[in-house]
Length: 206
Image (cartoon, rainbow, N blue to C red):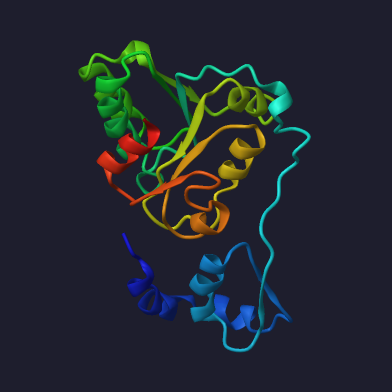
């Protein structure tokens, strides 16, 4: 899942972007991983790292009414976000903890396949797809969960949802990829796992 090797070749098609980037006084990146990724296009302009931030007055433990058995995913349902890996890991978790539930927030081209897998596995009562939700609804959804999981496979430059989840008081499990290790100190702020490993993800959730 390491796409850095194809980036230098792809950059040859991005000469217009490279030209304008090098006219800037400074380029801002949200993480060191993002800075490393964009640096192939930058010859002169310095890169400054300024991490993303969130409104902690909106995402707050004060809203907590958590269901400890609910696992939450927030993001696009696309391959690189690893929602399919989470669903497979969830099936493993169910063998140990049959009362857990999984909620997906977000939409994407993988949703239909995920829903079919849920039906085929006869776990429809334990998996919920909320689709896109409003920014007003999101803090309450975090507050109602027991654990947050970000199972990205690659190209995760930062992971804003991790900040939202932690600010809401949730324990987090995330893939060790991109800028995620800059947000999560493994074993301190959460648990990091190998991207794509269903077994590691399931064990970390348990």
